[in-house]
Image (cartoon, rainbow, N blue to C red; front, side, top):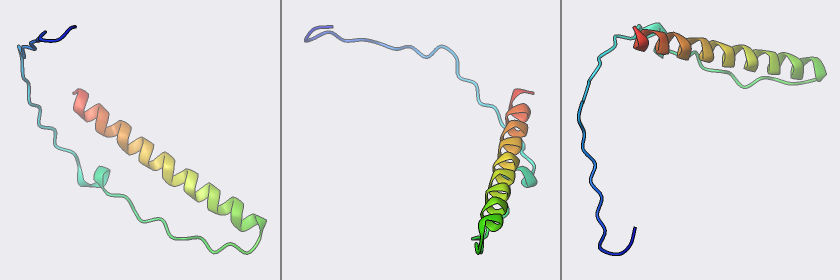
Amino acid sequence: MGCGTTTQQVVSKIQIQKVKIPKELLTLSPLEKPQVKNELDIINAYSLLFYKYKQCEIQINKIKELNDE
């Protein structure tokens, strides 16, 4: 495209979807700062962090499923 060239975009269809998302899918429990004193505490902290991450991932997938319905 050179100088003076214009482009146009035309929107042909607009669709608004309202999805009711249950409150429990939008709520995350806070993650407390772990008290680490040894290697086992570090492993437990990482395990808890991974568990919370997977919970979030599951909730996001459930929200996506609701949106697809």
